[in-house]
Image 1 (cartoon, rainbow, N blue to C red):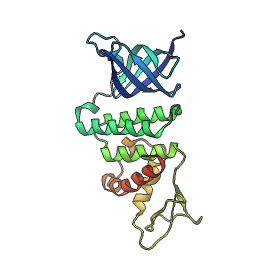
Image 2: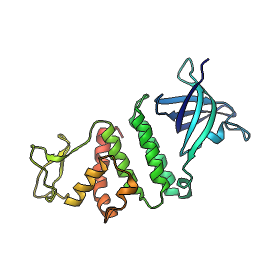
Image 3: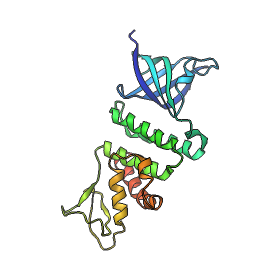
Image 4: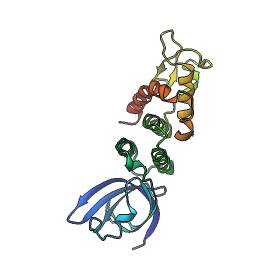
Length: 230
């Protein structure tokens, strides 16, 4: 049978039999792959070193007649080793992988693969806060799913005045002006940046970003629960 080549990131791993494992991989060009990694749990397995968690690997595989193909060979491209040095980063990494896996179908576009790579890069940088990474990741997922909020005009079509305090109208995915609103100009600015193609390590340099992202995080989490089936 024809052998296929691609890159992959581990999403799930399930032990099978005495030494095998069924793995789910996210790829840039084949969507999600479920592959049987035969003998991978043996100490001398040649496959194990190339499919580490929090890594990007070159893989060779054969498509199966059913849902599960066969992993033939692996080669590590990059392992984000700094993630595993802190338990908080490891837990967040697991959470982001689970969120992406749950919120995508079997054939997600390459943008989802790229997003997970960018998330690993951010987690590998100790200077970038976990809360910023989580909020950025959810904002990017919401955008890829087609639910990016309108952060330029109000729900009634007026220019958004970020100097005023304004809550969000979820039905319209936009803000409305209200005297009891609680979003400041800095919070609106950060939301705009989170929902745009920016890297977390660049956003970390914003003055008082930790405080601002803490104020924005509940809103982004609520949007994720609403639109990403979380």
